[in-house]
Image 1: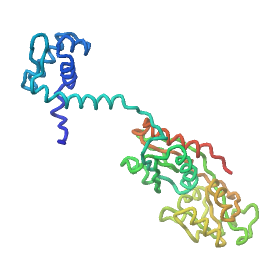
Image 2 (image 1 turned 90 degrees about the vertical axis):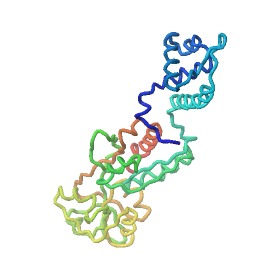
Image 3 (image 1 turned 60 degrees about the vertical axis):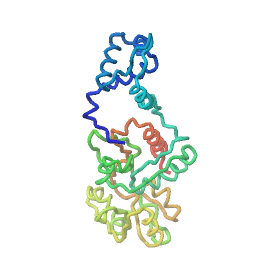
Image 4 (image 1 turned 180 degrees about the horizontal axis):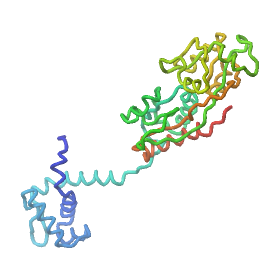
Length: 310
């Protein structure tokens, strides 16, 4: 199939093909005009333009019938197919049926959100949308908008800054932080002093070169300096370290309470106020009215937007 020459086609009135198809069906200028709900002179004008365009009479009068020429007969089937495809496209349903649709959703996460969302989302999709597949990947704040613009991601979930109007953002939940530690490895009670907190060895999640990672800006606001002795790019890695060594980890409270107990860890409040960004769902304006994207965003909101801290 040859590439479409848009410059060539822009001067061609596609309504002429509709007039041609009507003539092929009716074999009468009068009846073709009635079919198109236009006046007969307008239909005659269309036929004249078609004859000039194709350099052929296209239809010749035989008695009271306008019979197609050989050229018209050759054009008839391709024109009918083209118009049929256009009509199907116009009337195609814009709805998304999760029970039957086959597609891939590409999502970017901060790692704690992935652990909170994906188990429940995968379970829902197996029941409600068996033909839908999920591809998840890490998405850091500095990269997420480029990944959305390049269509590498359909949407992203995490702590992101407000950006230009070409993006849409929906807040899912506020974040708070808690400390986790193994009660048999560290002699801490139900609370910890600020001095002890800052002095204790810490394991930390870090997706950057900074040991403080995403906690750095929060700690800077109170002038705190953590004694970071180990980092991991994954929350499960940090939980594993804290379960095996006398370390403290500062984690999002939802993550700490949901997964800390599985590692035998105790969860206590952070001994100071640390402001961390809300978790939001972000997508491009182009995806805003996409029925499939709207459906997935609704499922994510159901899971995360109404999730209580356990």
